[in-house]
Amino acid sequence: MSEESGSKDAKDTSGDLPSWAKLNAKLRWWSESQKKFMAVIVTKIDDKKKSLVATFVADKKVWKEVPFSKLWKKGCPLQPDPDAAPKGSDASPKEQGEQKPKDEEGEEQASKADDGTSTPDWWRQEKSKIFDKKEQQKREQALEDERKRIEAAEEQKKEEKKRRDLLLAEKRKVEEAFEKRKKEAEQQKLKEEEEWRAKLRERREKEAKEEEEKEKEREKKREKKREEKEKKRKIEEAEEARKRQAKEAEDKKRRDAEEKERAK
Image 1 (cartoon, helix red, strand yellow):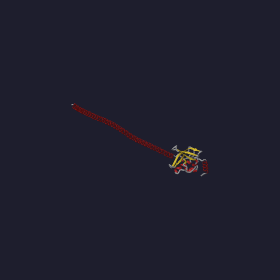
Image 2 (image 1 turned 90 degrees about the horizontal axis):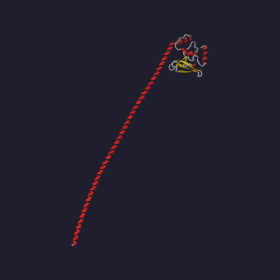
Image 3 (image 1 turned 120 degrees about the vertical axis):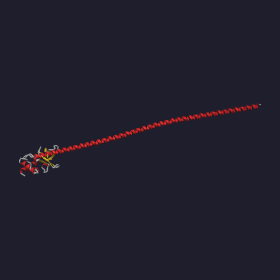
């Protein structure tokens, strides 16, 4: 490490921000979940909070906030992009060591960048575009699958609601039919009771009329008996009167005879 590089590192550390961490700088972010670097852009630097915001190129809605202090630590997920590094970069040897490609092609690109003869890494850019496109397609496919899942769930809810409505309708029909039969049975029962009462009244009226006729017949018989008894009584009285008159006449005749006898 040269003395000049050491003095530059000391200057960057005291400023709390590496030289490659600038507004609108194109950097890269190491994704632990996908195990690869993702392209990001520095969209905000907050000196009060001592942090910066890196927004993902593939999805502008996704961003990461990184403290200045973490940028100096080894293993920081936010790192300078070697493909976007300008000619004569003043990054510290420590940073350059972290940014050093692992394969030979990366070393060749780094050496060309040092002497100012590097050409654009078009195939990596194309690969990144293809990857971003694939990621976009994956996200779109995931959204489409989620949309289909939601639509299927909604359709299932509609079918379930339709089934419940049908069951409720059938239940209502059964209840209405039951109530109708119950009402008809009650009406039939009332009708039968009314008919029974009418027949009972009719029978009782008939029985009362028959009883009245019988009573009249009995009264006629009693009247006839009374008349016959009265007639018999009158006959007996007349016979008694006749006998009494005959006896009186006999007695008178006998007295007259006795008087004539005494007169002689």
